[in-house]
Structures are given as C-alpha cells and as structure tokens.
Image 1 (cartoon, helix red, strand yellow):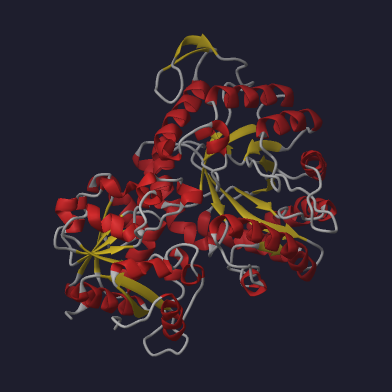
Image 2: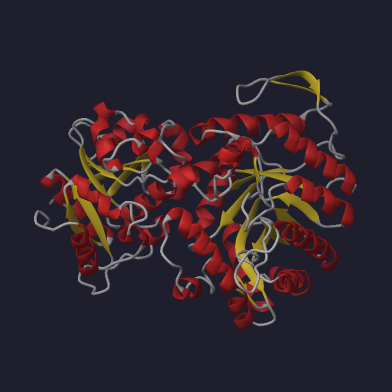
Amino acid sequence: MENTLEIGAYSFGDTQLNPDGSSRSTAEAIRNLFDAIVLADKAGLDYFGIGEHHTVSMPASSPGAIIAAAAAATTRIKLGSAASIIGTDDPVRVFQQFATADAISGGGRIEITAGRGSSVETFPLFGYELDDYDELYAQKLDLLLTLNTSATENVTWSGSARPSIPQLDVVPRPVQGSMPIWIATGGSAPSSARAGRLGLPLAYAIIGGQPHRFAPLADLYRQSAKQAGHTDDNIKVSVATFGLVAPTKKEAVERMYPGWVNLNVEMGRLRGWPAPQRSSYLAQVDAPSAYFVGDPDDVAERIVALHGHLGHMRHFLQGDHGGLPQEHLLESITLLATEVKPRVERLLAAK
Amino acid sequence: MSSPHATTIGILGAGRVGTALARQAMKAGYRVRIATTQSAADNALLVEIVTPGAVAVQASEAAASDLVVLAIPLHKYRTLNPLDLTGRIVIDAMNYWAPVDGVFDDFESDSRTTSEVVESFLTGARVVKSLNHIGYHELEEDDKPAGDASRRALALAGDDAAAKSFVSHFIDRLGYDAVDAGPLAAGRSFQPATEIFTGSHTANQLVALIQKDRPLADAA
C-alpha cells in the first residue's frame, strides 16, 4: 500500500456550449484543455490525463499531440493518456508520439495508459471490426510493451494484428529507457487479474456505484501480480472518477449538474437510456458514492477514505463534460492542487 | 422447492455481472460454482478474493448445477457447450449491446429476441430470460425482504413452466419479486432500451408495463 497520493485531473476535451445550447468549436475545446494543463502545472497538480474520444462534445482525439504540446509548456506535472485506445491505433505510432513528448518534457513525466475506452467510435473511424477486439487489444498491447522494454532502437515483433517488425529501428527511445505503461479498466475481475499477471500498473475508471467496492479487485490485482512473481514498483493502482471542486459543496454540485445532464442525454440517445433525473445525480454526489463533487474538505476526506480501501497512489478527477464553463474547470483544478492536495497529505500523515 | 443450501448455482462468466450474482446468490445461502473459458486453476485466485465462498470449476462442472446462469458477453455465446447444458435450467442474463460490443449479424439479421437465438443454439437447455435488466451493482444494493412494499421486481420469460418456477424462487431468494412475462419471446419487453430495462420497478409497475406490450393471459 502506498502512503502518498498523487492528485490529478483528466479530460476528454469538453466543447463549450452557446447560450442556445449549440456547440462552440472543437478547436476551442482543445485550446481550453491545453490551457487547463498549463494551469494545473503552475498550480502544482501532480498528474493530467487526456482522451481519447472522437466526438463533437469530447474532441480530445489525439492525446499524443496534446501531451507533446503540454510537455513543452510545463515543467513538473506528469502527463499521460487516459486512455489510448490501442486496439484501433498503431502501437508503433503511439509509442513514438509519447516517446517524442518524453524527449520534449526532459524525460520521466510522460506515461501511456492503454485501454479500450468507454465507447467504440474508433472502430468505424479506423476501419476495425469490433468482434476482433480481444485479439487486437492483446497483440497491440504486446507490441507496445515490446517497444517500451526494448534495450535498443532495433525491434523485432511478429503478429497478425499489424505487419510484423523484422529488426527495424523505432525511434526515439524514452529518455529514461522506458515509459510507464498502465492498463485501464472499468473494473472487471478478469482484467484486474490479467494486469497483475502482466506486472503492469492498473488504472481503475470508476464512474458509478460505490468505489470502495473495488477493494477486492485491487486485492486480486496485487495477489495476481505476486503470484506471477511481480513485486516491483510497477505494481500500483490509480483511480479515475467523476468530480469537481468548488469553494462550497453546493456550488460544486450545481456546477457539474448541467454538464452531467447533457452527457447523459447524449449517451442516452446512443444507448436508449431515459431522460436523466436530478435525483439520480444527487444520489451520487455524497460519500460513499462515485462523484467526488464538493468543497476541498469533502473531496479530500473522500479521497483519503477510499485510499483506506484501495491503497491507490493516484486519484484523478474529471468534471468537464457536457459543456462545463471553462472558468469552473480552471477553478476546480486550482483548488485540487492548492487546497485538496495539502489536505490529503495531512490526512494521510495523520493516519 | 428444496432448501437453497442443497441447491447449486453454476455461473458462467466472472465479469461484473457474474461476480455480483455469485455474491448475491451466496448471501441467499446458495452454493455457487464459477467458470470461464480459463481453467479452474487460473480462476482460483479470482474466485477466492472476489467471490469468497464460491468454487472455481471447469465450465462443464458449472453447467452440471441445479441452475446455470449465462453471464458472458452475448456475442461470445457460441463459446458455450450445448451438450453440457442439455436438460439444464439456464438463466440467460445476457444483452445485445451494440454500442459497446459491436454489431453482430446473429442478432441483426434475426427478428427473434436474443434469448431465442441463444436457446436455438443450446438445443435441449431450458432457457429462462432474466436478471438482464438490473445493473450489476444494483443487484447487490437494491435487494429487499419479501413483502416490502417498495421491493424491486425482476421479469422472467421462458417456455418451460417448471424452469420458470425454479427461477422465480431463485429471484425471490436474491431479494426481488419475480414477475412472469410469459413465453421466451415475451422477453422482448425487457430487452435493452425498453422502459423496463432502463428503470427500476415494483411488481405491480412491472406487470403494468408488460401488459402494455401484450396481454398477460399465460403469466403466473
């Protein structure tokens, strides 16, 4: 169990809305995201995760490009994908983009998180069949790991998910030899066990229910790693949840609500859900539920309480969806770094 | 109906639905076996930690239970072994979920419900469609004792009356009222994107919603 906790944010990009409800530009959303990352670095946030989604409302389609730009404009913050949809991308290109960002950053603060993502819009976009998903994902993860752990630029790999690589150079190499590669999961037991057997760090995305119920999964992950002989620093858990910080709990709850409605209306249109109810939103904003929406005391206490169950080393929040006004995102990030983070440190030290 | 202590529940699938169901069934006093396409040995640690009290077994052994629950992604239904399930009471808890799992011709080009397609594949199994319209974390949070006026109800549909009676009792033990929607084809009323699927209802509300779709003449 870790006894320190990195505090972070993540975003898929959040296209702002006009007063009539129509979407503003997706380019503005990308620029806003960049500005938020730069502010997060200045404020002292530990981590920022980006994308990958491919929709008008969430346009952060290219985490590698945003991270490369942010790498040049920041000095301390760790930057990672959240997550890279490697099943429908070329792991060579993903690796090269992140290794490039790593070089620009000075080295050591760029990470890749490989995942499926919560939606499947990349499959028609890049011409893949969803029923190939498991095989695509397994092979492409294997290639990504092969590239990352290679001792030299010269790499050999063979498989059927992409052309084989017969002793070809893949450049640049990461500054410190390799980059952290995480596995993202929504929390199924088999995927937790698999990540443990692979000896990779595990990022849980917890978007509903009661997050402390993930405790057996985190335990399964650690035991699976141990059983497979992995005991190094790579065995660690991070947690991504919805959340927004404001000066008061009431403001935080009110600020995130309109975007939550918009997100659920959009998802509902795709998946046949009914109109979202305010009562179901309010049912999730207090401990021990899944939305970390509150003032700095509330959010810090809940993060530390969850840490008692999961022992995670990083907790990062997403509150910008459905057109959250940019100033509310920036204030949340500032409060996370300057108010929540020191509270979390004090609460952990007092344990 | 025999005591739950003597009744074995075999769950095929150890994902979010399968593991939540395993814990809820054990809470009700049932003996639970879990299997996946992995070997029992490969699942031993998972079962020990995530569903303590259950036993990791081979798929054929899970299938040889008094009641079998299918809790794998629907598009993998052809990985099931029909011979293992012949004569077994089988709950189909799976859903066709194209936005997440993709579009599959087996279901797109067939006008029947997904459970009827699954039943055709599992020749000889006594298929009951149920447990598909409650969220996996709700299953462990929404249960209430029998008689509670606000108790949530779950629908079931099937063509084998004895199998349905067995499943109704199981649902009741899990903490929910069971509402018989009729033959297996009537499961259409609680597939994804229906009012039943996306909501939470008491038995009376559920009966009314099912009757909106079709007369409840042959329902219990």
